[in-house]
Image (cartoon, rainbow over all chains, first blue to last red; front, side):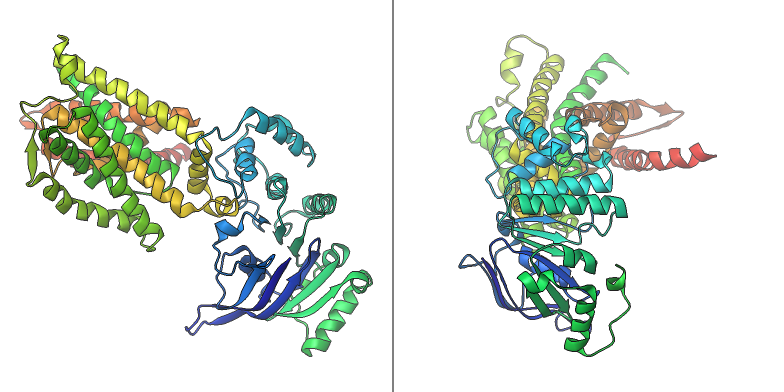
Length: 264
Length: 295
């Protein structure tokens, strides 16, 4: 469905701080794939997601969506295909607008916005039903400003908003990393529910190896901007944390850094 | 303060209130400090005055003024979004350029409207004295603009504009081109400022290239004073507060100008100093309140 070929992306290109964040990445995402993305800090996980979303323009290579070259498409144009949840719970919603208003903005993702009502009565009925899905009791608080909600509530709403209009591709960028363990777990369960019930094609970046193994049908590991591991199907099901570590040593032949990746 | 001075302040507060609504739109909704207004107010005045002297209907000339203001604002938006110039600097560039443009439009530094019909004349002909006619007309217009702005902000497009000012990443992810929203928003804002400029020119009987000096500071002062006094709990309330702030600001200025301490009194040329001080006080008041509240 979506294909990356030879994608290379630099930060601060031409300066002394030049970093090759993505290095000749080739990846084919199939319809219905739920891919977890792992890798140590600075491996290029978030950059890969941002490059997919169109936040950064690659220096070479191409992004093709259903046969259409979208490499040069800006972020807002790609948004019609993609739902996105960020690591920072504050980035996915507008604090000064109400729950209903935020959801209405998401309901019109990729559509023309004209001079009709921003939130209609029909919208509100839909939102009340949708919000019930996340089970936080927010259906009675549709007119509350989002700024009044907690990070976990905001993240759950962002997740709901990203999937309310079915996205062709759902991008989750360590979306539970900034939450407390309990909330993170709930958010993860919600993620699993939303993704599997609608069989959404999903790319989920995580620091947590167990999470990466447990969720999804495919796992890719990044290191220094390259995909060093790509397992799917049965091989993925049988994967253990030790396997991942062993794979990592084998491919890279270097000491695995003691960063957050091991905090499982 | 005499009754006439009060009516004068009210009239000024209402007509400048339309300008303040424009400043509110950029400063508060879009989070875009826009200095274009110092140039688009006289631009509106110039376009309206020249159109009237060329024989256009005065009401129609206001539409022409709004169109010109929209273009000026859209230019600032373009400089900011497409050329990546810092918003403040982009607006200063447009403002500076408009000084020359305004003189070109008028063919000189000012245009007189004495002896020609303005939008106020039909009202005056009914026998209503001038000191009632202009506040009345401006009140109706300001109310219309308030209603239109509130209506707009609750449309799909208006909501996208609110979101652009609040969280640009969020609204981009929802498929909105924030560049277009900013160009449109700054354009609309300056259309309102130019409308105010046209009305001011028709009211005082002349358009002058220097009449825009201090517009942004007066606008900010009004927005902040309005929020402090009238509140901004809800969006409609915050919009109304902008005009209320404008009226309070003009009354305060009128009071200051009437002040006499011994042989000292303020002159109209002290206006910008007073305004700047007022803005500083209004901006730091919450901070001072916090600090002294602790002691």
